Amino acid sequence: MDDDTRQALAAATDFATRVIAPQAESWNTAGSVPRAFFREAAAAGLCGLRVPRAQGGRGLGVGAYTQVLGILARECMASTFALVVHNNLAATVASDGSPGQVARHLGPMLAGESIGAFLLTEPGAGSDAQALATRATRDATGWVIDGAKAWISNAQHADVLAVFAQTAPGSGAAGIACFLVPGDAAGVTRSAGYALLGGHALGTGGFEFASTAVAEDALLFAPGAGLKAALAGIDVARMAVAAMCCGMLETALERALEYTAARPAFGQHVADFQGVQWMLADCATDLVAAQALTERATALADAGERATLAAAHAKKFATRVAFARIAECMQAMGASGLRRELPLARHLESAKIAQYLDGATEIQNVVIARALARRD
Ligand SMILES: Cc1cc2nc3c(=O)[nH]c(=O)nc-3n(C[C@H](O)[C@H](O)[C@H](O)COP(=O)(O)OP(=O)(O)OC[C@H]3O[C@@H](n4cnc5c(N)ncnc54)[C@H](O)[C@@H]3O)c2cc1C
Image (tube, rainbow, N blue to C red; front, side, top):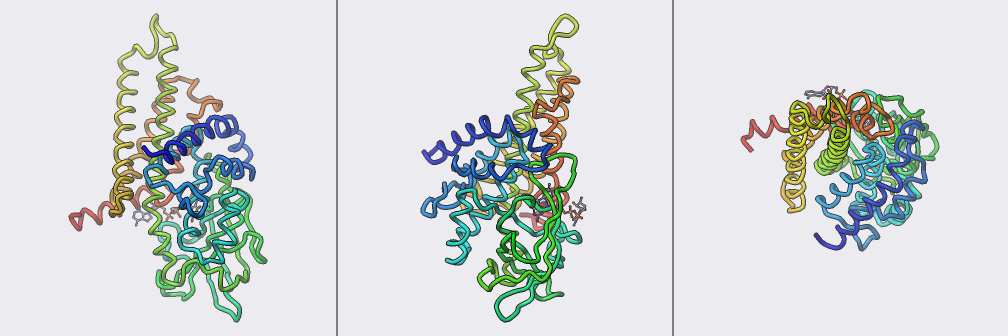
């Protein structure tokens, strides 16, 4: 392991213990992390994890990046995902932004002063992203955006909005572009945060754009390149979700082991019952398998090889076992497993949410089934 990775993992461990663990539950109740969360993350070097060192980031590879996320998600996946969305946009601005966009956005994003969001999903278009209906029309000075976005992480605070919009209705992916729109631009309104099963630290909500005018230099990806760019980043995003699920499951298993070893029942401890031992043994096997699938996918990505299939396997499996096995760890802890001062209830909610993020489980199966048909 190189020094950069070692430092990033140490920073993540410290941030998870010092900042996330004591506040995660209150963020869930409040409906989002506070803006200060991003500034504190920036101070710990967690806002430019994939931005090259030469541009002020940590320059981590995919494997190291996902390890950092796994450590943070051990305490709270929702706040970690808020950082993921922000980090991914910072990295995209660094790699694909125009000189003007880099100069305007990158510094404030690395400092956690300006918060990023990724606006692809719409009220009428989720998995089928190329059906998006938000419209971008050229005018004399730039573009005018009209439409609505839904299910957007960081919606409560976002300052830099990566908005995917159709420039040529009826043309599908060929007309989709992406714009960097200031969150306070005229005609932008945002909804209150959605009340969900959990995961409220993410501050998920919707946006509307009513004749929102942006300059030509707001264009991040030209028509035809927008959806391709979104899909190009999705493999790593799926690996990130898988790694966060592994982190949550790891915590749940540790808590269940500690609790059952100390809890007396019928003259012994709960951990002495073979039924409980086998339940936790199955949990450990699924954790190791999910970690192995995730590491396999990230190793392919770091080697510059195609990782779409490996990412789909990892994301499908890790989200599925996290949801099932975190529930079993709670079961082993009896009623105490339900207490909200432990992270298990929060993790169970987040594991369910993870089954939709960056492509629902069924979409991973679409990817896998296509590969089977091609005999990849
Ligand atoms: C907490 C949270 C945060 C999110 N953050 C963001 C964000 O920051 N930015 C963003 O753009 N989006 C975000 N999303 C949206 C997320 O990407 C979508 O929920 C996801 O793409 C699925 O879309 P949908 O929910 O509209 O489901 P739909 O597409 O309506 O699908 C409904 C069901 O049909 C299934 N289905 C769809 N197509 C197929 C098919 N071809 N074969 C088999 N089954 C299929 C789906 O798997 C699902 O089970 C977020 C979602 C959540 C829950």
